[in-house]
Image (cartoon, rainbow over all chains, first blue to last red; front, top):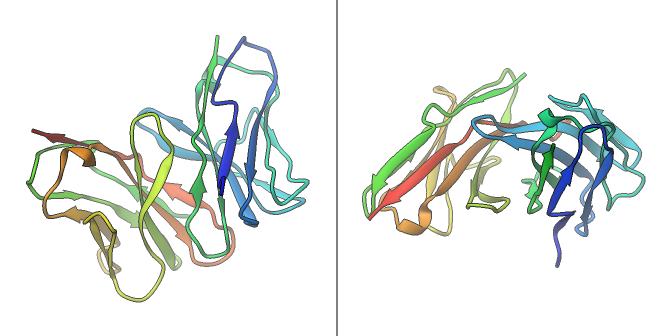
Length: 111
Length: 114
């Protein structure tokens, strides 16, 4: 019972590089989301999806892309990394009307 | 739109003392309410939830929270804290219909002192 799996756990990038943060869940949840966590700011929603083929923007979507081709996977793409994107990123999933389950996070540093 | 306010960024408390972590929310529609706990270098774990029914909800490790609709609050309480309760606690709200979007508070860091 893996739950929500995020890879990698740590990553260091140079400014301007692109990369994809992976998120997979094995609970057949329809809802998935990406958050970033910064000191003193709590968790802020980047993008979310209510089902395969459906995505929408959250509170801080700029500089990030997502897609949802399957129920299980919800990757987050950084198009051109900037130091302001240094953060801890969390993926979460939920069934309808139920609490979200979170992954262990990806710690991303942009130099 | 919803918002969540956690007024206390840090709460120090001695072991075996009671604690209350405050959470107030703003919403024009019906909401679900949640408390999550985050231990150092870990993800968020659900502590307790209010979806419907009894306004007093309890967790398995002694925490409880009461949904107060008139005061738009969902404060977290524990009558006697332990060193192992040291963590960051996040309050979150979501609409009861539609988007599943969570709005989180900025978190309260609970430090239990020996």
